[in-house]
Length: 350
Image 1 (cartoon, rainbow, N blue to C red):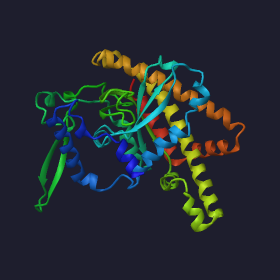
Image 2: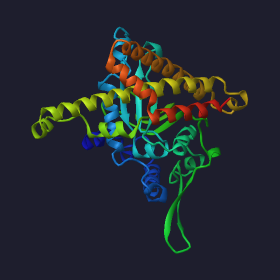
Image 3: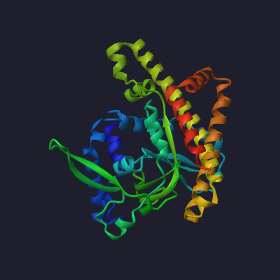
Image 4: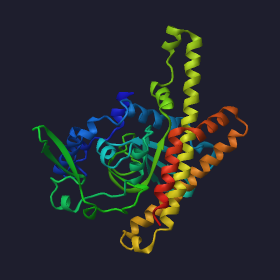
């Protein structure tokens, strides 16, 4: 699992053909500085969070969570969903864990990217913060001086007792590009590690894409992080224990799928509605091409996720296991908090 993650994760050091070396070094210094801050050392993230990211991407693709086979099998413009883990820089400063790419007749055959921020947090304040991140990228100061990271400036501070600590000063919003609204994200270090010769998207920055916050309870995450039981479990503990663990894993996967379907479909509708009702006083300051691209992307994602949820609900009518997982997801604590916070966050922008 760790080797799989490492092989698929973009490494900024390899982006010398895209960015200036000093710019890359500046971003990597920011990563190092961020890891030295008191906030980072508190360890807000699960220790197995990265493993869960790989598990998530694997389940989404191989498990066909979004019913692509049934929906697009006769679509000549269809390309199967592909997911990618993000670089450490984008994870840390653009607040995204996974990037997905879809392609079908509804997208005009174009590849449409979207970002995912995975969470297993039940603390409302932290979930609120996830929905507050605005779409911003670049730095007018770093364009003139590549040794300045677009993400901010680290400074070593000293407490009254003489203890040193690192504080990050984020780049002021006025110096950054972007739509300056939530629901969208940028990625600076994207690379298709599956096919470098025929990449689905060019290496480098993805300027704008819809961003979805996805999560489910820690109980599900615990089961999924362990993975599907291997044959060694049967040899060591017997077939009955193996079958029990296998059953628990498959049910956890189904429940996680339903949480994801509900969250993505709901947020896509909310973000699309938010963008449509933005007042002219806001849109007049936005890059018109970027806003048009964002609207096109979220319209495609809204239809994609709504169709996936409708298909799943139809199957649940005749499949008791799917129905049980659907009912579980409706009551999942993390999903319910995410639902409430997304409604509040996106309804503000009008």
